[in-house]
Amino acid sequence: MESSTPAELRRPAVRPQTQNPTRDAQFPVADRALANALPQIIWSCDAQGRLNWVNDRWFELTGLSEAETLDHKGALIAVHPDDRATVTRYWAHALETSSVVEFQYRILETSRGYRWHVARVAPVRGARGDVTQWVAAVFDIHDHRRTEDALRASERKFDSVLHLSSVPMAITRRSDGVYLFVNEAFSRLTGYAREEVLGRSSVELGMLTVETRAAAAAHFGGRDGGSVETGFRVKDGRGRWRTRCVRVKHKREPRRTHCAGPTTEGRISGPAIA
Image (cartoon, rainbow, N blue to C red; front, side, top):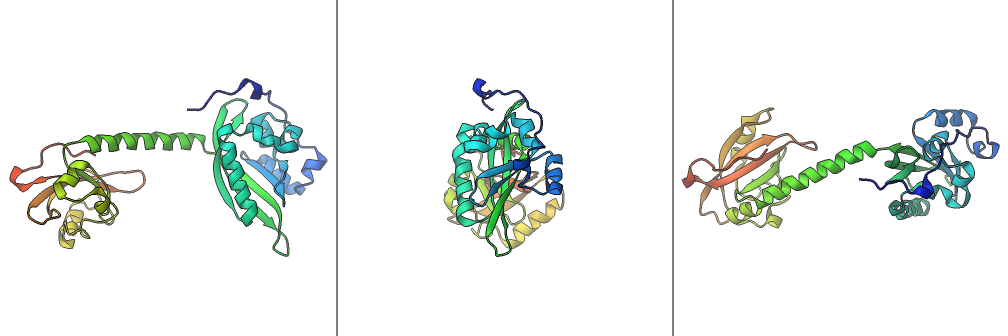
């Protein structure tokens, strides 16, 4: 997933630098002790956005020295080249608006290469409300990010399978019946274009009555799996069709998957994908 560490950026690990008066003067003793004990990266900037302090965790991970980090925006050498514009854009927005910002970017570590982190940067204000300093906490989210990327790839593959299926299929949100996905076969069957269906419920479209949808929802109760068949009308209202509904688990929210067909065919042919 990540590119290998460039040879020119491979640096030997350095010892934490905890005794530099200039650097440590930016934080009170108690705050320095706390920041250096944390497993996250903590850094601060002056009111104009110039980096003036980083905790020991930064040196441990990046292998950069204090001078390499603080002088001439040297900390950017540890930021993935593809992410530097993102960091610069968010940082400029924070300075312009004096507001909290959060962004994700990759940091080059000496032992593990580039890893995804999320930074939350907040202004510190003086007694008159003006910004006197900026403080940031940076958390490693690499494993979580890879899991999310894998999930999105799986969902794209799943959507592709549904789109190519000749069986009319749809996915709705369990809480309110709003359509989240329909394939081309479903659009041909019902007469509704995808744009007409997505974001609207079957009740709103007149495909189901409130009572019919409530009865189908009651069938599942709090269970996952199982199925129920209900009748519904297509856009022109000329035919009555049946849909087989299967309740499925989903990481973000509970959903139902539907397969549809005409009543004259009896039970619905083809599997309900769950």
